[in-house]
View 1 (tube, rainbow, N blue to C red):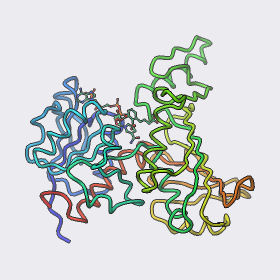
View 2: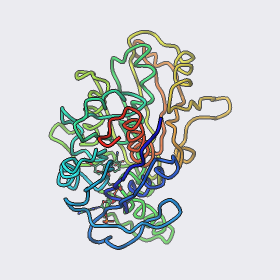
View 3: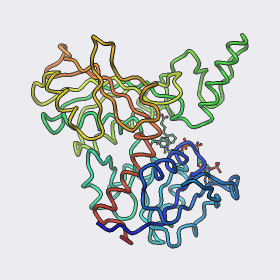
Length: 342
Ligand code: NAP
Ligand code: 3JN
């Protein structure tokens, strides 16, 4: 297949996710004719590394997208709402990393290993799910196909990088302050995170759950096409720099033994099974960081419910949870010839 090289804009190119996008576009030899890094006026004129050189950052504006084929957005939901429609109007296809459009009925919410065909109906904007949702649905997809999913109970252990570079800096500063026996200052997270766990990610909603928990529930239902699937989520910030871990309890439509589950997951795209308790081998955040797969281990029966399994799911939240998933969507758009210029 002959692939036309594309003009690719990255909105939020100076941020934690945006910088990862540039690295991944380069690593995967994405067919980039021209890379257009966009950010706030604070970054205008600065440069970002790409393809062995430097690219000058431009200010994100409504007229940034003339001639752009693909626009990857990771500059926050407010910027997505303001600028993504202008990008579409200019002829670009937008892959948006924010929550701005995820639950819109006419916007596909896509994880390429799970529901690539949802892209066929796109109308210019495609949404990338939340990082915690992405790794869970990748891990559950082989079980969904083989046995059906009846209920999910998930608890997350989310790294500070999910809250941006400032939160990473805050954890480092707090650890250093504790070493000097000084007081911990919290500004980007609601309480000190060093040597602590915070059962709050994003704001609280009326029912007592948080917005991050609600996102996991609603996004998973949309991706699986099961609007009433019972899902219970508890999202926790932990003092880990990068890579989210999740304890996932799933009730299936028929009995699936741990061995069968390991077999199904081992052959599935995007998954690596690390599950050898005798060798103390299971997925860990420090091993997943900087890598692409969703790692799954601790697969075992849950005898407290019918047809239920427990598993431990770990992935790099900035890569598969955000930037990599967005670039993979771009790759599927090319393959399916769903970019307007392709
Ligand atoms: P970050 O490190 O704080 O970076 C924010 C980026 O947005 C920077 O490039 C910043 O540019 C740019 N930006 C901020 N205000 C802007 C404005 N008014 N106009 C243009 N650009 C502006 O944050 P991050 O961790 O990369 O996250 C960015 C967004 O990605 C989040 O808000 C979220 O919507 C999404 N995200 C999604 C996931 C996921 O689960 N899929 C995970 C993390 C983040 P400057 O450097 O010029 O300020
Ligand atoms: O906290 C995490 O680990 C993931 C954070 C994701 C995030 C952070 C700020 C704004 C999002 C998101 O992707 O849902 C958003 C947002 O776009 O609403």
